[in-house]
Image (cartoon, each protein chain N blue to C red):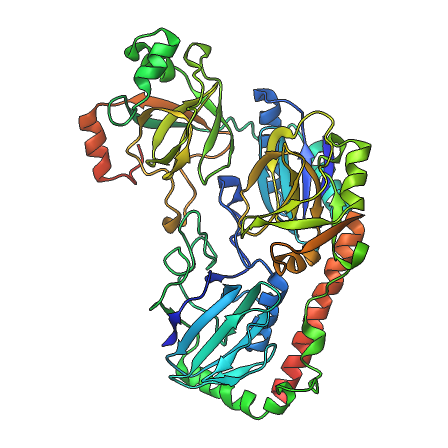
Length: 342
Length: 229
């Protein structure tokens, strides 16, 4: 019982919040690229764990076709892939009930890049080193350590009996999540925040450092005053950007140190690359700054050819923003649980 | 110690700006202290050559608090056990099909193949950090006589366990991967098995000693590659 991939889409992997505690051994953390959307999909599917850590399917650009082999409650967040259930449009950002044999179709996303599918009870592939995230490079975790293929059957975490109980709860409240004009107070406030900077481009807020001193004054100005465009080489490991070259005092090479999701490495050529979920644990290029956690989801939804701008903020501001964003999620969780309890 | 913010969820503690055993020892000492002091909100550490990256949960603790914590535990020195790391022995079958570039390394160094093996296996190598791949050790202290440049054209596929020389560095490819180092041998041990969910055979701060073995021994160990050796 669970989900059967009839057509797996362009790049579909199972992800949770990532593999914690193994980066000192050289393992990538992995996890969902847009963790905000991933968390929201969990809440909407009735996975009310406070950390929203159940495993979901991350689709990239085009989602494909999935057959439900048992009754499920699921939800879709992130890029709008025009979801259809048995050919009928269904809403994004809402719990949806599926019966055994129903087919979900996800098309090419007109905008955005990544869509998250959560099911009630989570995708229950075995956890490897504490996480169900797929690490494509090391071929571990997720479904057999690889991207999903046609014919894969994904188990879910709840029994059919448990799902049926939740289906009844959702069924009585479907009007609150209905498709169409935005009558649901539950839908809109839940989308991730996105800010716009220079020229109306997506703004990525950055904490300066840890090697900002490796850059010239001019280089720092270049970085802050120009938009950068996502190149064709953007994937789950890194987004490589194009734009004016950022001047370094001596060279891009540093003594390798630990890097994080959001670290902005400047290569020898002077171009920035932002580390994404599958980044290596350590790196040897100078880092001008780190995109704050709250703005990573915005970047994860941009495609090659789209533009970003950068702005420096302090670590204190960044933590404050993160806490605010987390509170938004917790409030949403509370509202959702209240609705389900009514 | 210089403390630097890494976004909103990590602090980088820099303990020096060069690759040296004494600086790396300080990194491991600090790592040990952070790991043995339970402080809510501290999640994970990544030791490197000269720095320690400390991940924190921004819902629990912030940059200033983590910095203060690191400064405080640095003061509580002295009593911490002087961990020198363990010595991990790695059996290696040198040359032949396992080390296709051994003859090149010998030629380049003006030595016989046996001498290269003797020199390479004749000392212990400190693991400064793990990175690049899971379990890929950055080793220090290779004998200058066997320094050999990397291949001009990297191989697309190197078997797991291969031991190589890249410039003045030596190391092991823990899993199959592309790479440009001169391959001089291979260990039959499985170095990292993620599916086991266990810690690897070695960690940053440990030392590695390569022990030459014959093809026969290689085949025997290959039967039980997960064994402790």
